[in-house]
Every structure is written in C-alpha cells, then in structure tokens.
Image (cartoon, rainbow, N blue to C red; front, side, top):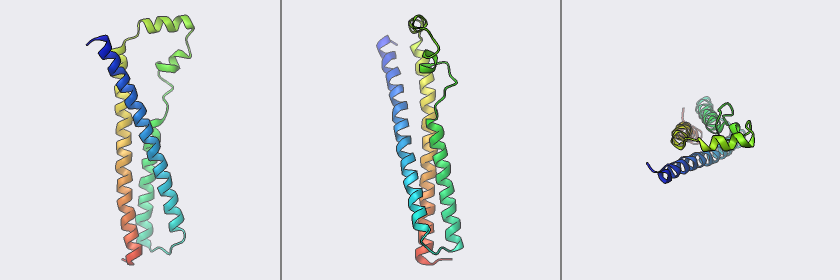
Length: 147
C-alpha cells in the first residue's frame, strides 16, 4: 500500500469518526425532544395502568439509548495518542514522534474506535425504534381506551 493510500485511509477513518459523532449528537437531540414531548403530553392526560407501563417502558428504552449515545461520544483521555499525547511532549519530542509515526497502526486504531462508536450508535438507534413502537402502543391504548 502506498503512502498516499495510507494517508487516504487515515483521513477516511478519521472522517467516519467525525460523522458518527455528528449522527450521535443528532440522535441525542432527537431523544431529548421526544422525551420532553412525551412528558408534556402525558402529564395532561388521564392514563390507565397499561398506558403508564408501556409508556414507562418506552421512556426507559429512550434513557438507555441516550446512555449508549453518550458512551459513543465520551472522550477517552486515558490513551497515549492524539492530542493527549501531544499535550505531554515538548516541541522536539513532537517532531521526533511524528517522524516515526506508523500511519498503518493509526488506521487500525482509528478503525477500531470508529467501529466501537458505530456499534454503540446502532444499538441506540435500535432502542429508539423500539421505544417508538412502544409509544405507538401506548398511544393506541390511550386513544382506544383498550385494556
């Protein structure tokens, strides 16, 4: 693999991390809006026990989804790479470190980070979808007077 290909792979993986973080931020905002909407709507309604239970399960799923999303964007300051490493070095050490930098190892590391973030985001989205289904059931219970 040529140096140009390695640099392109490096840039691609770093861009994927940024895209995943952006998507996660949007998901967190969406979950917050949905939870606020549920709360403001439900507090004014007379709900049956089944509607409370199904709606509560939906809120619980949304909270877990928010937790997964937050975990996906949580900074890892314990590693010895990136700006955490640079903050501990002198200018001369930074030059020496960048001269011996292994771009292929960075691509592997960043790919693993991107995959972990993507996996957490995917699980969070799945939970939001499940919460939406439960919200629909709760709405049907309230509107239909079922159970």
